[in-house]
Image 1 (cartoon, rainbow, N blue to C red):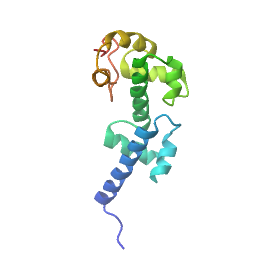
Image 2: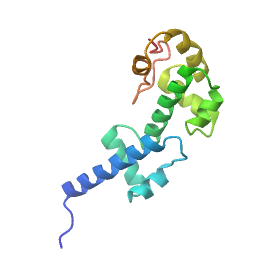
Image 3: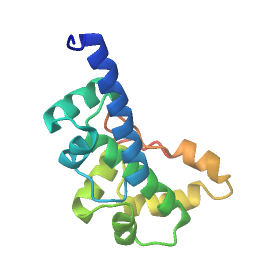
Length: 149
């Protein structure tokens, strides 16, 4: 039996990458790392990282952190939880790392976001607030002009 062609291997990898992305979307609050994701996909961690970035434009870790920040934004919009509680609820293990990544994606700290979004999004339907306040992916937010409303 002949080996797989490059195209067949690429298509098989894309199926695996989609499964990894779906797993991140479902299990973002769980302790996930690239090694565990790679084992689950039957790939080496290096191959997973390279191919995931090639397919989706960012590393698996960056994608995971973006999912966590998106969920954190939703929790902070409700205003019922502290920033620390939100960090741990979305799977963060370090408030400092979470706050740094949140600030990179959103353009302001989680506590500043919580203060400002409650006033800015007051009266907006949640589906509109979610769309308007979505984090910027694949680039850092402009620190001078946060993209809130």
